[in-house]
Amino acid sequence: MPLTSSSRLRGLRRPVLAPAFGLAALPLVAALFCGTAHAQSIDLSHGGQITVTAAGGFDWDQNQKKVTAYDQAKAVRGDVTVTADKLIAYYRKKAAPDGAPAPAAGDAPAGAVTGTTASAKPGSDAAAPTGQPPAPASTPAPADAKPADGKAEGGDPDSSGANEIYRLEAVGHVHIYTQTDQGWGDKAVYDMDQAVLVMTGKALKLTTPQDILTARDSMEYYSQQRISIGRGNATVTTNDNRQIRADVLVGYSAPPDQSAQPADQKKDASQNSDPLANGSGKLEKVNAFGHVWVRTQTETVTGDRGVYVPDTGIARIVGNVHITRGPNQIQGAAAIINMHTGLATMTERPGSRVSGLVVPNSGDSSDRK
Image (tube, rainbow, N blue to C red; front, side, top):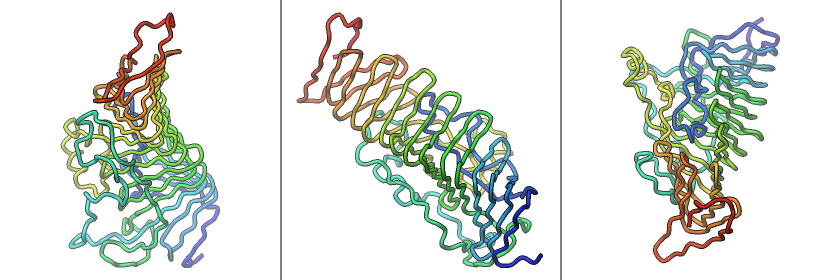
């Protein structure tokens, strides 16, 4: 059957090999309390070819330069699997190897880090964040599939690497998982040019052996800036029942440590055009914005803003701070929380006062004032 400009290949069950596919790691905010990236993170940015299968077959649209896999669509690369009702891959001709301008690796996505301190060394201090949280990422539908050299030629997406995938979408009942980590959402979009992954849906959830991360609005990961964001009542709960919650949680990760990698892997990583292929490093700092709520084993602390540094286990909460331990309550301007010991200490600001309610014989003689 000849292929038209919009060919529908229904009923095909054979796997499609797509070596150009790539996905970012899911947000690392789930490492809030353990402070390290997981050994088997949900990451499709490296690991060889991706095998895509679908019970309903594939559509190939040459005009829009996209391939769609329908009905129980699945993409597998190494230990990572993505399943969804539909997978859509947008492709384009690869740019000429010589003379083609490369995307600026240091340019941040528009609005990605507004109001944050990404330019400073993450985790360098425990000062509470100021300003507003980062603006939500925008992932508009692709309007132009032109490659870097300006050509807009079509072609077979499986033609010996002549094309590259620049955007991948998973739609409907999205499930991304490895042997240890799992993520769920209604939609996931990965923009490879900007190296940004955005997951949205009504029941966003990421589970690891140590933590559970949930969010109401979106989970985002900015590879070039090594920033992960949970929006909308973002909550992290650990196995020992510690919890932090805020309107927006923003995690900053260190560059990946390549000192322990073999020399050949370091070389390959430096030559890879996908900035996500080097993986993610250790979580260094987490900023919390809006309706911050922290639960330790003994206390709950609320405030307007906060910052947590995993290396020290110290969190600082500022703005309308309330500490509650049993029937005892203390109010003030700021508090320091030791997540290792579970103790919270109210700190004063010049000219301000700390007030509270301490119930005698409440069974706890270690309340902070």
